Length: 146
Length: 146
Length: 121
Length: 121
Ligand SMILES: Nc1ncnc2c1ncn2[C@@H]1O[C@H](COP(=O)(O)OP(=O)(O)O)[C@@H](O)[C@H]1O
Ligand SMILES: Nc1ncnc2c1ncn2[C@@H]1O[C@H](COP(=O)(O)OP(=O)(O)O)[C@@H](O)[C@H]1O
Image 1 (tube, rainbow over the protein chains, first blue to last red):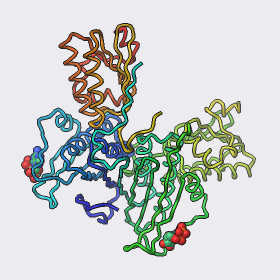
Image 2 (image 1 turned 180 degrees about the vertical axis):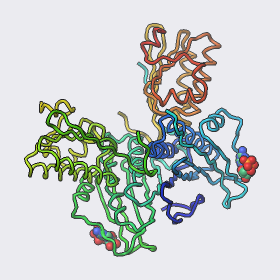
Image 3 (image 1 turned 135 degrees about the vertical axis):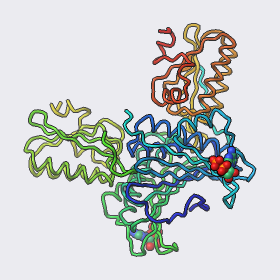
Image 4 (image 1 turned 180 degrees about the horizontal axis):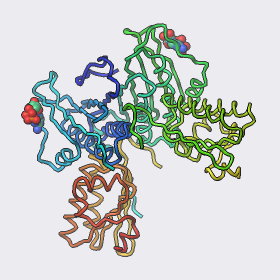
Protein backbone atom coordinates (compact mmCIF):
# COMPACT_ATOMS: atom_id res chain seq x y z
CA UNK A 1 0.00 0.00 0.00
CA UNK A 2 2.90 2.35 0.61
CA UNK A 3 6.58 2.76 -0.09
CA UNK A 4 9.29 2.15 2.43
CA UNK A 5 8.73 3.64 5.82
CA UNK A 6 11.89 5.20 7.09
CA UNK A 7 10.39 6.39 10.33
CA UNK A 8 9.81 3.07 12.02
CA UNK A 9 8.72 -0.44 11.22
CA UNK A 10 4.97 -0.71 10.81
CA UNK A 11 4.52 -3.75 13.00
CA UNK A 12 6.50 -2.60 15.96
CA UNK A 13 5.40 -3.67 19.44
CA UNK A 14 2.19 -2.13 20.75
CA UNK A 15 2.10 1.38 22.03
CA UNK A 16 2.13 1.28 25.84
CA UNK A 17 -0.93 2.54 27.73
CA UNK A 18 -1.25 6.33 27.55
CA UNK A 19 0.33 6.48 24.13
CA UNK A 20 -0.92 6.48 20.56
CA UNK A 21 0.89 6.67 17.25
CA UNK A 22 -0.47 7.87 13.94
CA UNK A 23 1.56 7.60 10.76
CA UNK A 24 0.58 9.62 7.71
CA UNK A 25 2.06 10.07 4.28
CA UNK A 26 1.22 12.66 1.60
CA UNK A 27 2.72 14.12 -1.55
CA UNK A 28 5.68 16.35 -0.61
CA UNK A 29 4.10 19.47 -2.13
CA UNK A 30 3.08 22.70 -0.37
CA UNK A 31 -0.43 22.14 -1.70
CA UNK A 32 -0.73 18.62 -0.26
CA UNK A 33 0.65 18.84 3.27
CA UNK A 34 -2.50 20.20 4.93
CA UNK A 35 -3.67 16.76 6.19
CA UNK A 36 -0.56 16.53 8.39
CA UNK A 37 -1.44 19.66 10.36
CA UNK A 38 -5.12 18.64 10.43
CA UNK A 39 -4.38 15.22 11.93
CA UNK A 40 -1.89 16.56 14.45
CA UNK A 41 -4.23 19.30 15.64
CA UNK A 42 -7.11 16.82 15.88
CA UNK A 43 -5.01 14.45 17.98
CA UNK A 44 -3.90 17.29 20.27
CA UNK A 45 -7.50 18.40 20.75
CA UNK A 46 -8.56 14.82 21.57
CA UNK A 47 -5.71 14.59 24.06
CA UNK A 48 -7.21 17.71 25.64
CA UNK A 49 -4.32 20.06 24.95
CA UNK A 50 -5.52 23.62 25.52
CA UNK A 51 -6.77 25.58 22.50
CA UNK A 52 -3.69 27.82 22.19
CA UNK A 53 -1.39 24.78 22.34
CA UNK A 54 -3.45 23.13 19.59
CA UNK A 55 -3.19 26.27 17.44
CA UNK A 56 0.56 26.54 18.06
CA UNK A 57 1.12 22.89 17.19
CA UNK A 58 -0.94 23.21 14.00
CA UNK A 59 1.23 26.13 12.92
CA UNK A 60 4.51 24.47 13.90
CA UNK A 61 3.65 21.32 11.96
CA UNK A 62 2.64 23.38 8.94
CA UNK A 63 5.96 25.20 9.12
CA UNK A 64 7.98 21.98 9.30
CA UNK A 65 6.01 20.44 6.42
CA UNK A 66 6.20 23.54 4.24
CA UNK A 67 9.94 23.88 4.83
CA UNK A 68 10.58 20.27 3.82
CA UNK A 69 8.15 20.42 0.87
CA UNK A 70 10.20 23.16 -0.75
CA UNK A 71 13.33 20.94 -0.47
CA UNK A 72 11.74 17.76 -1.82
CA UNK A 73 12.60 16.18 -5.14
CA UNK A 74 9.75 15.84 -7.67
CA UNK A 75 7.23 13.09 -6.88
CA UNK A 76 8.60 12.63 -3.36
CA UNK A 77 6.31 11.57 -0.53
CA UNK A 78 6.40 13.19 2.89
CA UNK A 79 6.24 10.86 5.88
CA UNK A 80 4.96 11.96 9.25
CA UNK A 81 4.75 10.17 12.57
CA UNK A 82 2.68 11.74 15.34
CA UNK A 83 3.21 10.28 18.76
CA UNK A 84 0.85 11.27 21.54
CA UNK A 85 2.11 10.69 25.07
CA UNK A 86 0.46 11.78 28.27
CA UNK A 87 2.74 14.79 28.64
CA UNK A 88 3.70 15.73 25.08
CA UNK A 89 3.12 15.30 21.37
CA UNK A 90 6.11 14.50 19.17
CA UNK A 91 5.88 15.00 15.41
CA UNK A 92 8.55 13.64 13.08
CA UNK A 93 8.38 14.67 9.42
CA UNK A 94 10.75 13.35 6.76
CA UNK A 95 11.32 13.52 3.03
CA UNK A 96 13.69 11.50 0.91
CA UNK A 97 16.30 14.05 0.00
CA UNK A 98 19.53 14.53 -1.86
CA UNK A 99 22.43 14.79 0.59
CA UNK A 100 23.08 18.38 -0.41
CA UNK A 101 19.71 19.74 0.81
CA UNK A 102 20.03 22.18 3.70
CA UNK A 103 17.31 23.64 5.90
CA UNK A 104 17.74 27.41 6.29
CA UNK A 105 17.47 28.33 9.92
CA UNK A 106 17.85 32.08 9.49
CA UNK A 107 14.32 32.56 8.14
CA UNK A 108 11.18 34.05 9.63
CA UNK A 109 9.49 30.66 9.23
CA UNK A 110 12.16 28.81 11.21
CA UNK A 111 11.95 31.40 13.98
CA UNK A 112 8.18 30.85 14.10
CA UNK A 113 8.70 27.09 14.30
CA UNK A 114 11.30 27.42 17.07
CA UNK A 115 8.98 29.77 18.98
CA UNK A 116 5.85 27.63 18.73
CA UNK A 117 7.36 24.23 19.47
CA UNK A 118 8.98 23.42 22.80
CA UNK A 119 11.78 21.57 21.04
CA UNK A 120 12.87 21.36 17.38
CA UNK A 121 15.54 19.10 15.93
CA UNK A 122 16.85 18.59 12.41
CA UNK A 123 17.24 14.95 11.40
CA UNK A 124 20.17 14.94 9.08
CA UNK A 125 20.43 13.42 5.64
CA UNK A 126 23.97 12.14 6.18
CA UNK A 127 23.00 9.19 8.35
CA UNK A 128 19.91 7.58 6.80
CA UNK A 129 20.09 5.31 3.80
CA UNK A 130 18.34 6.09 1.49
CA UNK A 131 19.17 9.69 2.39
CA UNK A 132 16.36 11.56 4.08
CA UNK A 133 15.97 14.93 5.70
CA UNK A 134 13.61 15.56 8.56
CA UNK A 135 12.37 17.76 11.36
CA UNK A 136 11.24 16.55 14.75
CA UNK A 137 9.26 18.85 16.99
CA UNK A 138 7.85 18.44 20.46
CA UNK A 139 4.92 20.24 22.06
CA UNK A 140 4.55 19.78 25.80
CA UNK A 141 1.12 19.74 27.41
CA UNK A 142 0.71 23.16 28.97
CA UNK A 143 -0.09 22.04 32.51
CA UNK A 144 -1.93 24.59 34.60
CA UNK A 145 -2.24 27.13 31.77
CA UNK A 146 -5.74 28.48 31.21
CA UNK B 1 -17.17 43.32 -6.24
CA UNK B 2 -14.14 41.73 -7.86
CA UNK B 3 -13.71 38.10 -6.95
CA UNK B 4 -10.58 36.06 -7.54
CA UNK B 5 -11.53 32.50 -6.61
CA UNK B 6 -8.26 30.67 -6.33
CA UNK B 7 -8.61 26.91 -6.29
CA UNK B 8 -5.51 25.88 -8.17
CA UNK B 9 -2.28 24.27 -7.11
CA UNK B 10 1.04 26.05 -6.88
CA UNK B 11 2.96 22.94 -7.84
CA UNK B 12 0.45 21.20 -10.05
CA UNK B 13 3.17 20.32 -12.53
CA UNK B 14 4.57 17.67 -10.18
CA UNK B 15 1.22 16.33 -8.95
CA UNK B 16 -0.49 13.74 -11.12
CA UNK B 17 -3.25 15.81 -12.67
CA UNK B 18 -6.47 15.70 -10.66
CA UNK B 19 -5.24 13.14 -8.18
CA UNK B 20 -3.87 13.02 -4.64
CA UNK B 21 -3.15 10.11 -2.32
CA UNK B 22 -2.94 10.16 1.45
CA UNK B 23 -1.87 7.09 3.41
CA UNK B 24 -2.58 6.88 7.11
CA UNK B 25 -2.04 4.23 9.75
CA UNK B 26 -3.40 4.02 13.30
CA UNK B 27 -3.88 1.46 16.05
CA UNK B 28 -6.70 -0.94 15.05
CA UNK B 29 -8.84 -0.04 18.05
CA UNK B 30 -12.29 1.59 18.07
CA UNK B 31 -10.82 4.37 20.23
CA UNK B 32 -8.02 5.17 17.77
CA UNK B 33 -9.64 5.18 14.34
CA UNK B 34 -11.03 8.75 14.48
CA UNK B 35 -8.10 10.28 12.52
CA UNK B 36 -9.08 8.21 9.48
CA UNK B 37 -12.54 9.78 9.23
CA UNK B 38 -11.11 13.20 10.06
CA UNK B 39 -8.55 13.06 7.23
CA UNK B 40 -11.00 11.69 4.71
CA UNK B 41 -13.65 14.30 5.49
CA UNK B 42 -11.04 17.06 5.35
CA UNK B 43 -9.84 15.89 1.95
CA UNK B 44 -13.41 15.70 0.65
CA UNK B 45 -14.12 19.23 1.87
CA UNK B 46 -10.92 20.52 0.20
CA UNK B 47 -11.96 18.78 -3.00
CA UNK B 48 -15.20 20.76 -2.71
CA UNK B 49 -17.54 17.81 -2.23
CA UNK B 50 -20.87 19.14 -0.99
CA UNK B 51 -21.48 19.20 2.76
CA UNK B 52 -23.88 16.24 2.80
CA UNK B 53 -21.43 14.14 0.77
CA UNK B 54 -18.66 15.04 3.22
CA UNK B 55 -20.87 14.01 6.16
CA UNK B 56 -21.84 10.75 4.44
CA UNK B 57 -18.25 9.91 3.65
CA UNK B 58 -17.15 10.65 7.22
CA UNK B 59 -19.80 8.24 8.49
CA UNK B 60 -19.04 5.56 5.90
CA UNK B 61 -15.32 5.63 6.71
CA UNK B 62 -16.07 5.46 10.43
CA UNK B 63 -18.28 2.44 9.80
CA UNK B 64 -15.63 0.62 7.76
CA UNK B 65 -12.94 1.37 10.35
CA UNK B 66 -15.09 0.40 13.31
CA UNK B 67 -16.13 -2.85 11.65
CA UNK B 68 -12.52 -3.82 10.98
CA UNK B 69 -11.32 -2.66 14.41
CA UNK B 70 -13.60 -5.17 16.11
CA UNK B 71 -12.09 -7.98 13.98
CA UNK B 72 -8.45 -7.02 14.51
CA UNK B 73 -6.01 -9.09 16.49
CA UNK B 74 -4.44 -7.39 19.53
CA UNK B 75 -1.75 -4.81 18.71
CA UNK B 76 -2.71 -4.71 15.03
CA UNK B 77 -2.35 -1.51 13.01
CA UNK B 78 -5.04 -0.32 10.61
CA UNK B 79 -3.85 0.92 7.20
CA UNK B 80 -5.87 3.36 5.16
CA UNK B 81 -5.33 4.81 1.70
CA UNK B 82 -7.46 7.75 0.60
CA UNK B 83 -7.34 8.54 -3.08
CA UNK B 84 -8.90 11.75 -4.32
CA UNK B 85 -9.73 11.87 -8.02
CA UNK B 86 -11.62 14.58 -9.81
CA UNK B 87 -14.86 12.60 -9.81
CA UNK B 88 -14.64 10.41 -6.69
CA UNK B 89 -12.90 9.58 -3.45
CA UNK B 90 -11.81 5.99 -2.88
CA UNK B 91 -10.96 4.81 0.63
CA UNK B 92 -9.26 1.46 1.22
CA UNK B 93 -8.93 0.25 4.82
CA UNK B 94 -7.08 -2.92 5.82
CA UNK B 95 -6.08 -4.85 8.91
CA UNK B 96 -3.81 -7.84 9.24
CA UNK B 97 -6.25 -10.60 10.00
CA UNK B 98 -6.50 -14.31 10.68
CA UNK B 99 -8.00 -16.10 7.68
CA UNK B 100 -11.11 -17.02 9.64
CA UNK B 101 -12.29 -13.43 10.22
CA UNK B 102 -15.59 -12.66 8.53
CA UNK B 103 -17.30 -9.31 8.10
CA UNK B 104 -20.99 -9.54 9.02
CA UNK B 105 -23.06 -7.96 6.31
CA UNK B 106 -26.44 -8.47 7.94
CA UNK B 107 -25.95 -5.70 10.50
CA UNK B 108 -27.40 -2.22 10.84
CA UNK B 109 -23.89 -0.82 10.52
CA UNK B 110 -23.22 -2.55 7.21
CA UNK B 111 -26.55 -1.33 5.87
CA UNK B 112 -25.56 2.21 6.84
CA UNK B 113 -22.20 1.80 5.10
CA UNK B 114 -23.82 0.42 1.95
CA UNK B 115 -26.33 3.30 1.96
CA UNK B 116 -23.83 6.10 2.44
CA UNK B 117 -21.13 4.96 0.04
CA UNK B 118 -21.74 4.68 -3.69
CA UNK B 119 -19.80 1.41 -3.81
CA UNK B 120 -18.52 -0.96 -1.11
CA UNK B 121 -16.28 -3.96 -1.61
CA UNK B 122 -14.77 -6.49 0.79
CA UNK B 123 -11.10 -7.24 0.18
CA UNK B 124 -10.70 -10.85 1.21
CA UNK B 125 -8.18 -12.41 3.53
CA UNK B 126 -7.70 -15.50 1.37
CA UNK B 127 -5.55 -13.80 -1.25
CA UNK B 128 -3.11 -11.52 0.55
CA UNK B 129 0.03 -12.81 2.25
CA UNK B 130 0.33 -12.03 5.13
CA UNK B 131 -3.43 -12.39 5.37
CA UNK B 132 -5.32 -9.13 5.57
CA UNK B 133 -8.96 -8.15 5.53
CA UNK B 134 -10.18 -4.90 4.11
CA UNK B 135 -13.02 -2.71 2.93
CA UNK B 136 -12.90 -0.40 -0.06
CA UNK B 137 -15.54 2.26 -0.46
CA UNK B 138 -16.15 4.86 -3.13
CA UNK B 139 -17.97 8.18 -2.84
CA UNK B 140 -18.77 9.91 -6.11
CA UNK B 141 -18.83 13.68 -6.35
CA UNK B 142 -22.50 14.66 -6.32
CA UNK B 143 -22.53 16.70 -9.51
CA UNK B 144 -25.32 19.24 -9.73
CA UNK B 145 -26.65 18.56 -6.24
CA UNK B 146 -27.12 21.64 -4.10
CA UNK C 1 -12.70 20.17 31.07
CA UNK C 2 -11.26 17.01 32.49
CA UNK C 3 -8.16 15.60 30.80
CA UNK C 4 -8.54 12.54 28.61
CA UNK C 5 -7.75 9.24 30.30
CA UNK C 6 -5.70 8.02 27.38
CA UNK C 7 -4.44 10.05 24.45
CA UNK C 8 -5.79 9.52 20.97
CA UNK C 9 -9.19 8.72 22.46
CA UNK C 10 -12.48 10.00 21.27
CA UNK C 11 -14.08 12.36 23.73
CA UNK C 12 -17.65 12.27 24.87
CA UNK C 13 -19.40 13.80 27.80
CA UNK C 14 -22.86 12.85 29.02
CA UNK C 15 -24.57 14.92 31.69
CA UNK C 16 -28.08 14.54 33.04
CA UNK C 17 -30.41 16.74 34.98
CA UNK C 18 -34.10 17.33 35.66
CA UNK C 19 -36.21 20.16 34.30
CA UNK C 20 -39.62 20.03 35.98
CA UNK C 21 -40.59 16.37 35.72
CA UNK C 22 -38.47 15.78 32.63
CA UNK C 23 -35.06 14.14 32.56
CA UNK C 24 -32.63 15.77 30.15
CA UNK C 25 -29.57 13.89 28.96
CA UNK C 26 -27.09 16.24 27.26
CA UNK C 27 -24.45 14.63 25.07
CA UNK C 28 -21.35 16.43 23.80
CA UNK C 29 -18.54 15.23 21.58
CA UNK C 30 -18.31 12.33 19.18
CA UNK C 31 -20.54 9.27 19.31
CA UNK C 32 -18.69 6.46 17.59
CA UNK C 33 -18.00 2.82 18.35
CA UNK C 34 -15.43 3.82 20.97
CA UNK C 35 -17.72 6.16 22.91
CA UNK C 36 -21.16 4.60 22.31
CA UNK C 37 -20.94 2.27 25.36
CA UNK C 38 -20.87 5.30 27.64
CA UNK C 39 -23.92 6.80 25.95
CA UNK C 40 -25.76 3.46 26.09
CA UNK C 41 -25.20 2.95 29.80
CA UNK C 42 -26.17 6.54 30.62
CA UNK C 43 -29.43 6.22 28.67
CA UNK C 44 -30.25 2.78 30.14
CA UNK C 45 -29.73 4.17 33.61
CA UNK C 46 -32.01 7.12 32.89
CA UNK C 47 -34.72 4.83 31.56
CA UNK C 48 -34.52 2.66 34.65
CA UNK C 49 -34.79 5.59 37.05
CA UNK C 50 -37.39 7.79 35.37
CA UNK C 51 -41.09 7.37 34.72
CA UNK C 52 -41.54 10.70 32.98
CA UNK C 53 -40.40 12.17 29.68
CA UNK C 54 -36.82 11.78 28.48
CA UNK C 55 -35.12 14.46 26.36
CA UNK C 56 -31.82 13.58 24.70
CA UNK C 57 -30.03 16.78 23.75
CA UNK C 58 -27.58 16.15 20.89
CA UNK C 59 -26.89 19.84 20.15
CA UNK C 60 -23.21 19.47 21.05
CA UNK C 61 -22.63 16.20 19.20
CA UNK C 62 -20.11 16.65 16.37
CA UNK C 63 -20.16 13.12 15.04
CA UNK C 64 -22.82 10.42 15.14
CA UNK C 65 -21.92 7.00 13.80
CA UNK C 66 -24.10 3.95 13.23
CA UNK C 67 -23.44 2.58 16.73
CA UNK C 68 -24.79 5.83 18.14
CA UNK C 69 -27.82 5.67 15.86
CA UNK C 70 -28.42 2.09 17.03
CA UNK C 71 -28.37 3.23 20.68
CA UNK C 72 -30.95 5.90 19.89
CA UNK C 73 -33.18 3.26 18.26
CA UNK C 74 -32.74 0.91 21.25
CA UNK C 75 -33.59 3.76 23.60
CA UNK C 76 -36.69 4.58 21.56
CA UNK C 77 -37.83 0.95 21.76
CA UNK C 78 -37.13 0.64 25.49
CA UNK C 79 -38.88 3.95 26.20
CA UNK C 80 -41.85 2.86 24.10
CA UNK C 81 -42.23 -0.33 26.11
CA UNK C 82 -42.44 1.71 29.30
CA UNK C 83 -44.65 4.43 27.79
CA UNK C 84 -41.96 7.04 28.36
CA UNK C 85 -42.03 9.81 25.74
CA UNK C 86 -38.62 10.32 24.10
CA UNK C 87 -37.60 13.55 22.37
CA UNK C 88 -34.38 14.43 20.62
CA UNK C 89 -32.80 17.87 20.35
CA UNK C 90 -30.66 18.35 17.28
CA UNK C 91 -30.06 21.09 14.78
CA UNK C 92 -26.62 20.43 13.30
CA UNK C 93 -25.86 18.70 10.04
CA UNK C 94 -23.53 16.33 11.91
CA UNK C 95 -26.56 14.79 13.66
CA UNK C 96 -29.45 15.47 11.28
CA UNK C 97 -27.68 14.06 8.24
CA UNK C 98 -27.00 10.60 9.77
CA UNK C 99 -30.62 10.37 10.93
CA UNK C 100 -31.85 11.46 7.52
CA UNK C 101 -29.47 9.33 5.43
CA UNK C 102 -30.48 6.20 7.35
CA UNK C 103 -34.20 6.95 7.20
CA UNK C 104 -34.53 7.32 10.97
CA UNK C 105 -35.83 10.89 11.03
CA UNK C 106 -39.43 9.67 10.95
CA UNK C 107 -38.92 7.42 13.97
CA UNK C 108 -38.12 10.25 16.38
CA UNK C 109 -39.69 13.42 17.70
CA UNK C 110 -37.00 15.95 16.80
CA UNK C 111 -36.81 19.51 18.13
CA UNK C 112 -34.37 22.24 17.14
CA UNK C 113 -33.59 23.34 20.72
CA UNK C 114 -34.08 22.23 24.27
CA UNK C 115 -36.83 24.71 25.11
CA UNK C 116 -38.93 23.47 22.20
CA UNK C 117 -38.34 19.85 23.25
CA UNK C 118 -39.39 20.55 26.85
CA UNK C 119 -42.62 22.26 25.86
CA UNK C 120 -43.27 20.05 22.86
CA UNK C 121 -43.81 23.09 20.66
CA UNK D 1 -19.50 26.86 -5.09
CA UNK D 2 -17.27 26.07 -8.00
CA UNK D 3 -15.59 22.67 -8.02
CA UNK D 4 -11.87 22.44 -7.24
CA UNK D 5 -9.62 22.02 -10.25
CA UNK D 6 -7.37 19.59 -8.46
CA UNK D 7 -8.25 17.53 -5.38
CA UNK D 8 -6.35 17.61 -2.09
CA UNK D 9 -5.65 21.31 -2.52
CA UNK D 10 -5.83 24.06 0.00
CA UNK D 11 -8.60 26.52 -0.66
CA UNK D 12 -8.43 30.27 -0.48
CA UNK D 13 -10.64 32.98 -1.83
CA UNK D 14 -9.71 36.66 -2.03
CA UNK D 15 -12.32 39.25 -2.96
CA UNK D 16 -11.93 42.99 -3.06
CA UNK D 17 -14.30 45.93 -3.10
CA UNK D 18 -14.53 49.60 -2.20
CA UNK D 19 -16.40 51.06 0.75
CA UNK D 20 -16.36 54.84 0.43
CA UNK D 21 -12.74 55.62 -0.35
CA UNK D 22 -11.44 52.49 1.35
CA UNK D 23 -10.36 49.30 -0.38
CA UNK D 24 -11.41 46.15 1.48
CA UNK D 25 -9.69 42.84 0.74
CA UNK D 26 -11.63 39.93 2.23
CA UNK D 27 -9.76 36.65 2.58
CA UNK D 28 -11.42 33.29 3.26
CA UNK D 29 -9.93 29.84 3.75
CA UNK D 30 -6.45 28.72 4.68
CA UNK D 31 -3.35 30.83 4.21
CA UNK D 32 -0.40 28.46 4.03
CA UNK D 33 2.65 28.12 1.80
CA UNK D 34 0.47 26.72 -0.99
CA UNK D 35 -2.03 29.56 -1.01
CA UNK D 36 0.08 32.51 0.13
CA UNK D 37 1.24 33.48 -3.41
CA UNK D 38 -2.35 34.29 -4.34
CA UNK D 39 -2.81 36.45 -1.26
CA UNK D 40 0.49 38.23 -1.94
CA UNK D 41 -0.37 39.08 -5.54
CA UNK D 42 -3.85 40.27 -4.62
CA UNK D 43 -2.47 42.58 -1.93
CA UNK D 44 0.33 43.87 -4.15
CA UNK D 45 -2.22 44.67 -6.84
CA UNK D 46 -4.38 46.54 -4.35
CA UNK D 47 -1.42 48.56 -3.10
CA UNK D 48 -0.49 49.52 -6.64
CA UNK D 49 -3.99 50.66 -7.50
CA UNK D 50 -5.08 52.44 -4.34
CA UNK D 51 -3.94 55.60 -2.64
CA UNK D 52 -6.39 55.44 0.22
CA UNK D 53 -6.79 53.16 3.22
CA UNK D 54 -6.54 49.38 2.87
CA UNK D 55 -8.54 47.03 5.10
CA UNK D 56 -7.62 43.34 5.06
CA UNK D 57 -10.52 41.33 6.46
CA UNK D 58 -9.29 37.99 7.83
CA UNK D 59 -12.56 37.07 9.59
CA UNK D 60 -13.04 34.00 7.41
CA UNK D 61 -9.45 32.75 7.59
CA UNK D 62 -9.25 29.37 9.31
CA UNK D 63 -5.51 28.89 9.20
CA UNK D 64 -2.67 31.40 9.03
CA UNK D 65 0.85 30.05 8.61
CA UNK D 66 4.18 31.86 8.74
CA UNK D 67 4.19 32.56 5.00
CA UNK D 68 0.85 34.34 5.43
CA UNK D 69 2.20 36.30 8.39
CA UNK D 70 5.20 37.29 6.27
CA UNK D 71 2.90 38.62 3.53
CA UNK D 72 1.03 40.71 6.09
CA UNK D 73 4.36 42.17 7.28
CA UNK D 74 5.47 42.86 3.68
CA UNK D 75 2.13 44.53 3.01
CA UNK D 76 2.50 46.65 6.14
CA UNK D 77 5.97 47.78 5.01
CA UNK D 78 4.88 48.52 1.45
CA UNK D 79 1.80 50.40 2.66
CA UNK D 80 3.97 52.39 5.08
CA UNK D 81 6.30 53.47 2.28
CA UNK D 82 3.34 54.84 0.39
CA UNK D 83 1.63 56.33 3.46
CA UNK D 84 -1.35 54.10 3.00
CA UNK D 85 -3.00 53.19 6.32
CA UNK D 86 -3.41 49.41 6.74
CA UNK D 87 -5.96 47.85 9.07
CA UNK D 88 -6.64 44.18 9.80
CA UNK D 89 -9.96 42.65 10.74
CA UNK D 90 -9.66 39.50 12.82
CA UNK D 91 -11.43 38.02 15.79
CA UNK D 92 -10.80 34.27 15.63
CA UNK D 93 -8.17 32.35 17.55
CA UNK D 94 -6.95 30.88 14.24
CA UNK D 95 -5.70 34.34 13.21
CA UNK D 96 -5.11 36.13 16.52
CA UNK D 97 -3.00 33.34 18.01
CA UNK D 98 -0.42 33.28 15.19
CA UNK D 99 -0.08 37.09 15.34
CA UNK D 100 0.25 36.96 19.11
CA UNK D 101 2.60 33.95 19.29
CA UNK D 102 4.99 35.60 16.84
CA UNK D 103 4.87 38.98 18.53
CA UNK D 104 3.28 40.70 15.53
CA UNK D 105 0.13 41.93 17.24
CA UNK D 106 1.78 45.27 18.11
CA UNK D 107 2.77 45.91 14.50
CA UNK D 108 -0.78 46.07 13.18
CA UNK D 109 -3.95 48.02 13.76
CA UNK D 110 -6.36 45.20 14.52
CA UNK D 111 -10.14 45.54 14.65
CA UNK D 112 -12.69 42.91 15.68
CA UNK D 113 -15.05 43.54 12.76
CA UNK D 114 -15.17 45.32 9.43
CA UNK D 115 -17.38 48.17 10.58
CA UNK D 116 -14.92 49.03 13.34
CA UNK D 117 -12.01 48.87 10.90
CA UNK D 118 -13.75 51.19 8.44
CA UNK D 119 -14.56 53.80 11.04
CA UNK D 120 -11.37 53.27 13.03
CA UNK D 121 -13.34 52.99 16.25
N1 LIG E 1 20.31 23.07 8.50
C1 LIG E 1 20.49 21.76 8.23
N2 LIG E 1 20.06 21.26 7.06
C2 LIG E 1 20.22 19.95 6.79
N3 LIG E 1 20.77 19.07 7.63
C3 LIG E 1 21.21 19.53 8.81
C4 LIG E 1 21.09 20.88 9.17
N4 LIG E 1 21.61 21.04 10.42
C5 LIG E 1 22.04 19.84 10.80
N5 LIG E 1 21.79 18.91 9.85
C6 LIG E 1 22.06 17.50 9.92
O1 LIG E 1 21.29 17.01 11.01
C7 LIG E 1 22.05 16.07 11.75
C8 LIG E 1 22.26 16.54 13.13
O2 LIG E 1 23.16 17.59 13.05
P1 LIG E 1 23.88 18.16 14.33
O3 LIG E 1 24.80 19.22 13.90
O4 LIG E 1 24.32 17.02 15.15
O5 LIG E 1 22.63 18.83 14.98
P2 LIG E 1 22.67 19.30 16.45
O6 LIG E 1 23.76 20.35 16.46
O7 LIG E 1 21.28 19.83 16.63
O8 LIG E 1 22.98 18.06 17.23
C9 LIG E 1 23.33 15.88 11.01
O9 LIG E 1 23.15 14.77 10.16
C10 LIG E 1 23.49 17.16 10.22
O10 LIG E 1 24.16 16.93 9.00
N1 LIG F 1 -18.10 -11.14 4.58
C1 LIG F 1 -16.82 -11.40 4.27
N2 LIG F 1 -15.90 -11.46 5.25
C2 LIG F 1 -14.60 -11.70 4.95
N3 LIG F 1 -14.15 -11.91 3.71
C3 LIG F 1 -15.04 -11.87 2.70
C4 LIG F 1 -16.40 -11.61 2.93
N4 LIG F 1 -17.04 -11.65 1.73
C5 LIG F 1 -16.10 -11.91 0.79
N5 LIG F 1 -14.90 -12.04 1.37
C6 LIG F 1 -13.63 -12.26 0.71
O1 LIG F 1 -13.45 -11.17 -0.14
C7 LIG F 1 -12.91 -11.60 -1.39
C8 LIG F 1 -13.85 -11.29 -2.50
O2 LIG F 1 -14.94 -12.15 -2.33
P1 LIG F 1 -16.03 -12.33 -3.44
O3 LIG F 1 -16.99 -13.36 -2.98
O4 LIG F 1 -15.32 -12.50 -4.73
O5 LIG F 1 -16.70 -10.95 -3.33
P2 LIG F 1 -17.62 -10.44 -4.44
O6 LIG F 1 -18.75 -11.44 -4.42
O7 LIG F 1 -17.98 -9.09 -3.92
O8 LIG F 1 -16.78 -10.45 -5.67
C9 LIG F 1 -12.68 -13.08 -1.26
O9 LIG F 1 -11.33 -13.20 -0.84
C10 LIG F 1 -13.60 -13.49 -0.14
O10 LIG F 1 -13.08 -14.56 0.62
